Length: 306
Ligand code: 3HC
Image (cartoon, rainbow, N blue to C red; front, side, top):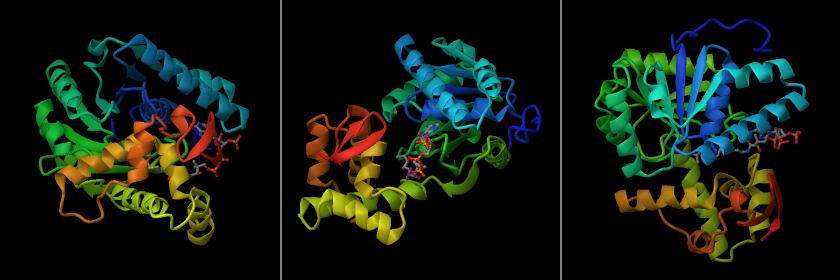
């Protein structure tokens, strides 16, 4: 329904142009929802290599096709959405954008390199936001050289369907900058919540330890993968069981999050690494993305326990 009325250019945030850095599992979705909102004259989608750019574009096309197929969007609107996205491997194309969302891999060295470059390249007014799920926003803000214009905007997978976005402020985030970013989340049709720069923010701080507990049950042979998931779906009303969800997120991502926390907060008992998670990641069974994890996967379809 929100596609029926003409949106205000720049929305309530005033961001006319938006940049998306990284078009992976989350990044392509963020780029897509920004372009779909219709409030931006242009969305610049950046990947450092052409093959990653092509994969990101394919993912957006596939998702738009699905929305058209289901009658949630007209073909014309999907084409307009795609037309608003400028796909590029040239970082310079981001320099005049009003707002940049980064969703590259969770490696602080790579983020340091990127934010140092963007901080030097972009106009002084450009606001930066990271979609990190577990790294410190404050650390990245320092690399950018503009910590007052830096927030976290944490989306959820699949970005196109999940309504929530956590908007994270550090001690140094300018309150007007934060308000603009909060409004931007509303402009693109999502529901924002506000949170400080804490490990896992709100959702992952509660969700990831619960996924680890489910894996610990499997390690102890308390219950099977299938029964843990059936129990949490039917007994707690969750849309996916915890092991299904871990496969959906990616077991490497789950391990990365919890490993970082264990190193940084060794005293916190809810942060621990289950054996079965390490074994699956070492075997290359990362869940949906590799076709096998706790379950067998056929594309996006979850099959029998592996
Ligand atoms: N684009 C367009 N359409 C999509 C899509 C996408 N990216 N992904 C799925 N769809 C479609 C499906 O194909 C399906 O179409 P169909 O009806 O034609 O088959 C439709 O949307 C709805 O899918 P489902 O029938 O599977 O509907 P569900 O009611 O099961 O909802 C779900 C799917 C929203 C994914 C639901 O299962 C859910 O909420 N799961 C939990 C997800 C979750 O917890 N995410 C958070 C993970 S944590 C995270 O991301 C944080 C990070 O930091 C780790």
